[in-house]
Image (cartoon, rainbow, N blue to C red; front, side, top):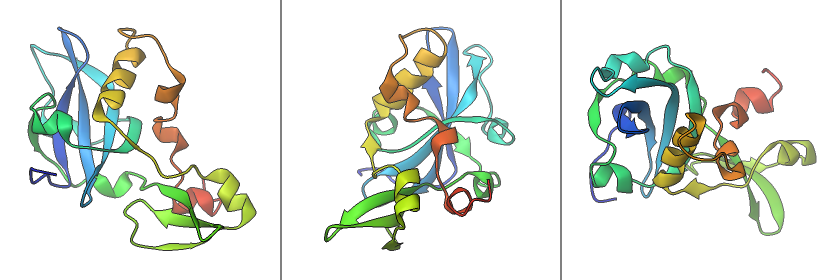
Length: 167
């Protein structure tokens, strides 16, 4: 990634000519970002402030690339980190030497997965940032719904608490 992005960077996501959504970088990895997109929309004439992310409902979450940020399509408006502790970090399943493993979102750890755990998890996936933007636009009726957008829903994120049955 060409730029230096920071955990907590808050950015605007265009929905249409009158509305914007709000996104946030949750983690910065060597070649990708883990971002969330919040459910609310704001009028472009009175856009949100960075602190508005606190208490917002997360709608979408994914590992993605920085193209929309790099080109200025998603304008960074500030940095807020106090809410990041409340955002789930996803686990994925990966196949290593023919055996299913659980892997952290950043790849810093993995372990063998039980069959039940493997059934709960999706394979690790990174999506283009335009897919997140299109998912938000579809949420607001600008684009047609698509199953690929459903895969980005935050409620589908499996973290350690959910995997252990605490949710």
